[in-house]
Length: 180
Ligand code: HEC
Image 1 (cartoon, helix red, strand yellow):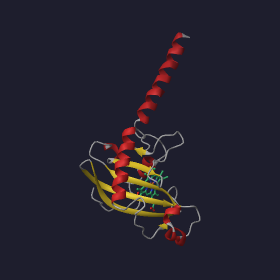
Image 2 (cartoon, rainbow, N blue to C red; image 1 turned 45 degrees about the vertical axis):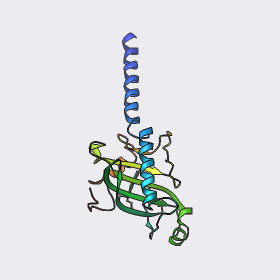
Image 3 (spheres, rainbow, N blue to C red; image 1 turned 120 degrees about the vertical axis):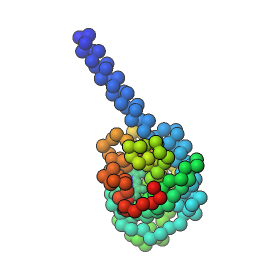
């Protein structure tokens, strides 16, 4: 019995440790603060917010929305300049081009963003920082209540990283070099 309970305690301890390591990959206060800086940059560059510029949307694919707009640029945060890819996700499912163009803000469901951070941020995954904003700039959360900002969801079987790692450069839409 003694050994059995010791074994269980060890397993429980290992699970708790694995959980805490994974928990630090995204959704921390630091991730939220960095995402806030990124949002400010996007607002200033008219990629997000009330003064955002709009283009012609295209039909989207799951999980990103019925209509999408994608922008490729660069941004500078804390002295580091990196590739910035902003995807605007529009809905609902059957939304038409004219409905999105006529009132983009009303159909905007979320902004999913990739920003290539400094070397060493996530060397396993080309240093991409992942974030999902709601239209007002607040962070969307996963069902466990974790904010979707940071290395989302490193080590998990589903999520930004798991899906995008199917591409060598983590980008589905293009193989072009975008300042990386
Ligand atoms: C199940 C797969 C899947 C998941 C999960 C996913 N994406 Fe994507 N993502 C795609 C596909 C497919 C595209 C290409 C869509 C298109 O045609 O514009 C894409 C495109 C993008 C783009 C445009 C750059 C590119 O890859 O071409 C960004 C930015 C992006 N996703 C961010 C995110 C973020 C942030 C998350 C997590 C919150 C996420 N994605 C989760 C599949 C996924």
